[in-house]
Length: 233
Image 1 (cartoon, helix red, strand yellow):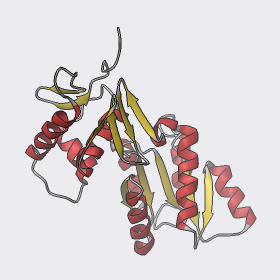
Image 2 (tube, one colour):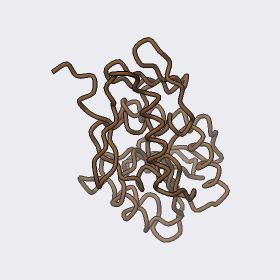
Image 3 (cartoon, helix red, strand yellow):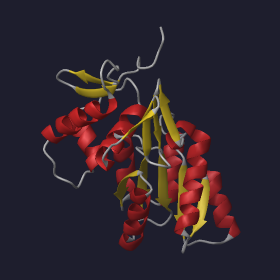
């Protein structure tokens, strides 16, 4: 899943815990311990959801939430606030500032993951849909199965993630560097030519004989999932 989540948390053990569990669920995670960095990170890449700690050094989570809600381009980003404050008045204050949900530390990770899925399903159902379909090609996120017409398409885990990312944004062109960051991760050093190798393997697995190739090469830019794939007109 290529849903992007920004974790804003200054306690390193909690930051590591959240990043590990979110990435295990297939989310793409960025994190920071500084409230002052949020605006820059959001401007660089808009996240699908923000997990925001209330108590941060410098600018507080409440103020970060208020600033995000004040701008038209960020006011609708879902925010789940984490805090050690359990008093009802504080929960009301957090929600009144614009947070979509509120969890008190120590919190249940499975419950947090469930709340994230619920919010994403409400605001961006395509992002958490179990199945992606285009023409006779189907990708099932739950079973990790890809089919074309009546045949199974056997893919490696990396090829599956690559196809999933491209299918979720048909027509959008991704550079090799962007695909490396999304599919392989920011912390893994892989040569950009590796993308070409995996795209080549993916194409061979997806298309046989005269079947249309769903992946489009944009010379000098990168790759995209052909938005015309499967259309009859």
